[in-house]
Amino acid sequence: MDGKILYDWPDKDFDESLRFTDSRQLGNEPYDVVIVGAGVVGCGLAYKLSQYQLRILLIDKNYDVGEGASKGNSAIVHSGFDAQVGSLESQLVRQASNQWPELAEKLKIPYKKCGAMVLAIDDSQQAQLDKIYKKALSNGVDDVELLTPAEARELESNISRGAQGGLLVPGEAIGDPFVTCIALAEVALANGVDILLGAAVISVENAGKMVKTLVISSGHRIDTRFIVNAAGLGSRRLADLYGGGTFEINPRRGQFLIFDKCSNFILNRILLPIPTSRTKGVLVIPTIFGNLLAGPTAEDFPPDCEEMSHTTIDRLQSLLADASLMLPSIIEQPVIGTYAGVRCHCHQGSYFIRVDDGAKGILTVTGIRSTGFTSFPALADYLVQLLADKCELSLSPDANAVDGRPESSWPGWWSKPIENTQRIKERPEYGQTVCFCEHISRGEIIDALDSPLKPRTLDAIKRRTRALTGRCQSFECQLGVAEIISRHFGMGLNEITKYGPGTAIISPSLLPDK
Ligand SMILES: Cc1cc2nc3c(=O)[nH]c(=O)nc-3n(C[C@H](O)[C@H](O)[C@H](O)COP(=O)(O)OP(=O)(O)OC[C@H]3O[C@@H](n4cnc5c(N)ncnc54)[C@H](O)[C@@H]3O)c2cc1C
Image 1 (cartoon, rainbow, N blue to C red):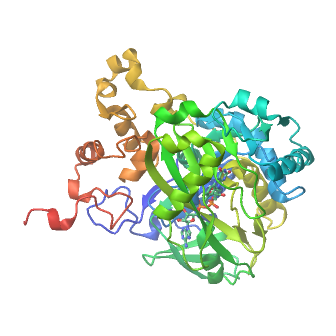
Image 2 (tube, rainbow, N blue to C red; image 1 turned 60 degrees about the vertical axis):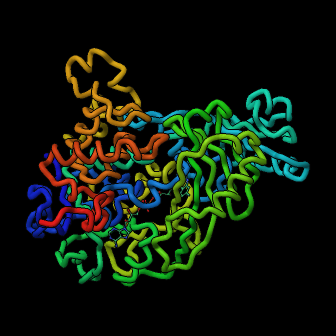
């Protein structure tokens, strides 16, 4: 039986069937496991745990899944060639990289093995290539290949004339970071996992007892036997609520430039510079949607600074200059947008995982800094095993559980209904274009609104359909999409928000006096 999807949405006019107003909506029994944080780590774990007979709740303070670091990354499915040899991260990234193709098919999420090239642009960097090559072999990635300058240019004709050589990494791939979280959460929901959005955990009571109580921002209380802290940048603050052990987080921002789709002819595969000890540097990346990206930067912020996901002109200019050292013609390409994501950098190391942290039955998962989009399937398997072996969570497989989504779940942009006359004949709304940049139809917007997580914000619709993401960056279609949401649910346009309460797209001061 499907789980419940509920929104802790303060506005009383919000859809009554989805509005969380009383803890009893979640049933009277304590949950077996509450996962705090619906990023790719939390959603991945909910997906894997939903294969067992357990009462599970996935909870997030945001009004959609995947709204933290999981929406602001480079979307590379790494092969693990450059991971720290012998680390847990290396092990999980390698395992996950092998799991991705089959999982993508099951979840109906886009995935493409486009390969990558590490480029040395001067003599000193050329010496580093051999070390990276040997590291790749030590990590078990043995399909890498050293390239002469001529061979590198043969594969990528627009790279710098001064390039001294390259390393070809065929196993690097790209995916869709938004739909990945959504798909995981949808399957978990179909298997009975409850999902509560818009609910920040602000207190943990009785942490040392068998049944613990989470208190959320609206004051409601939720009982559970196990807690998994997958709160990313919020993981330290959450761990303080249950007396979790020592670890420090500092947010590390990464800014990106998005180039128009007309630029994608200049590059075939991901282009990486020689990394430093601190960062992989500025990459140029073809996206699965057909754009190019340049980024990310690596800017450190103090521990308590959680909200710094804006972009800055000086850093964007310097990252463009860095990218042009490898790919000079990128300077001439049209930029259509910018964004930033914030990495969860843990001083104690990446993949910092603690069992029975502060109290029995609490699992802290933090420091999933740079590779969580790749590693989530193997990380989730690892966490399930830890919960079973170390925390004594008893696992009994659920014979009725599904592990994939129906064929109809592929995002519309992947196989455009607007190009399929038969589908338009069956449903004329697929022929009514709303977003002219990305060719997204009214039918796809409505499909997204009726999809399992019942998304209600513009950003949530954008991430499911790609409307609002094109060259015009929503200038042409924002109102059209808002009108469809408004009509579909009988809401006023003034109630439509960008990403939840307090982000209405029409300022109250612009509304006519009543
Ligand atoms: C710039 C950048 C580039 C990257 N590039 C790549 C890449 O190419 N490939 C790759 O594999 N990985 C990449 N990553 C890493 C990847 O994005 C992360 O490892 C992954 O998204 C981490 O997921 P998460 O679920 O741990 O965190 P998040 O996605 O941040 O999720 C944590 C969630 O917890 C919620 N939360 C926090 N506190 C509370 C609370 N008290 N109550 C309720 N909810 C709470 C937040 O709202 C958030 O939704 C990149 C990251 C960045 C920032």
